[in-house]
Image (cartoon, rainbow, N blue to C red):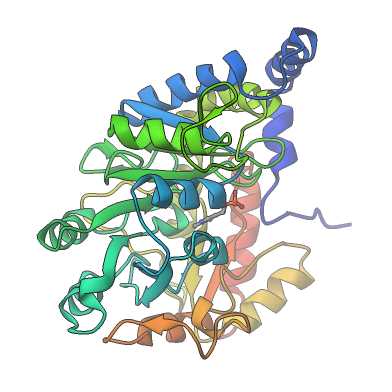
Length: 373
Ligand SMILES: *Cc1c(COP(=O)(O)O)cnc(C)c1O
């Protein structure tokens, strides 16, 4: 019987810190306080300090963190928000949820928003003046080219919201994801680098007024209980999830380091294989939410891994502009989506989670290398 290797394994992350997580859950159960409260404010303070920002606002999911951040930035229905097509559908869904119109841009070879694509959109006579925010995604764990993107946004007076859902702990020229724009949104979905035991998300910012608006809008627009200063919704974070995330945060640097070590082993093992390994962007650290290779023989590699009992995945098989819900009506930037379309048939995410053993990595490398090219 061959040992099965999953593509990711959130249960292994729980078991690694089981005693501390169980104690934290017990503490919340005994406290009688299950929504917001001291666990959530504790997590917010610890995560803000970790990211090097002044404020963090815990919310119910990464999607909600994105929507809430756009609202708190003052965006209005009908405003255009620039983002990428090669991303989780949540990025684009969140923009539409608050009534804004997504404009989708291409990515560079490190899967970040292409600055030339953003520049062309901002210069476009029709679309440019309506763009009010730009949402770069730090896809697979590596920050986008934030110097170039921020310079373009600043020149046009456009706000920058990082979608840092795959990049907890990653750095850009020494500064953490979450501190690289006007605000950032993180998902803490169980498989993310900082993952809860259910849905959770968090918004970070240095802008006090933005944080204050987000905090009010997360709970019915309340600044004082039962007084709605502005329209709001229910986007609150549970105390149980916050307590889990506080424990997980203490291990994040170690688990990210282990992910990077696994990536290094993949790099070495696949150095002479006929596939493209992840491109490292100068100036950024990579926290390897995913280790993604590209190959013309992607489906053959996928079949070989599956036959060997090894999990793998395609993130994402269809770019947003090809999804049934968006095709035909989505706005694309003037430079088109050529890289995005080419990548969709070539990308493959190999197993990646901190509890993988070196022996498992070697076995995966062996199966990939044996696929004829
Ligand atoms: C996971 C993810 C989200 C959405 O997060 P949820 O917590 O599932 O709402 C948004 N953007 C990216 C890039 C993600 O990976």
